[in-house]
Image 1 (spheres, rainbow, N blue to C red):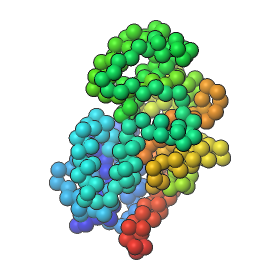
Image 2: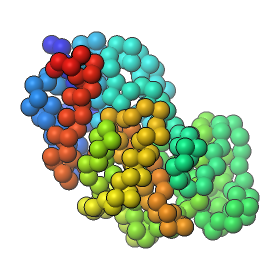
Image 3: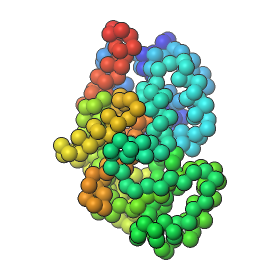
Length: 305
């Protein structure tokens, strides 16, 4: 059977035997998207991106949803991406995925006027002296994280108490991967991080993520909490400006923003690959997503679905 759309997950979430709340959320959200597409008359399947039996020529489009193991298997994922992009159409596109998978994209957006925290990129094979960064920048704290990552993997808050230990670890990591250093943003701890969901250029909904007491990471993997958020006009315009600064307009995006140490809106991350979109917080947003996917389908099908 040929499919119009294939929703991609990772193998852990195809037929899970243990249904934690985390996994239930994944299944619920993918089901909302699948049903919204099926109501438009599309044939839809949901499989793992590394499914060995899938003939990718048998699906017109693949949509990245919960491929949350790609950054732990990046070389394998990159090889697969190169192959499958020649066999079907990726949403978002391969160009956007390859650009967005590496946080060097932040420098590209900054060059186009998007406010980001002050960032130093450390390339693979180099070494770093974190004490010099703190002294030269006058920062009290900084954040270290990989350029290719997810779920706060190898993300560390550094101050004078742990700087030596993290410096050793950083230089060990730099042997294999590029890293980045950013000024620590106090308001991420006190206020949180706001995530805006957009389909095309259209704003759908937003959430605010707050770190648990004593932590700085807002992800629920690390005890962060999720709250509904009514995005301001300024936040929406900022998010739309981020998308307009991309190499091409994404079909879907999550814009993670915060208020920097100067009180200005800044971009934390732009998620175009497999962002959690919190359809469960606003189920009708799955219909908005399906509407956007139909536009892509119609464009590639000459206007006929």
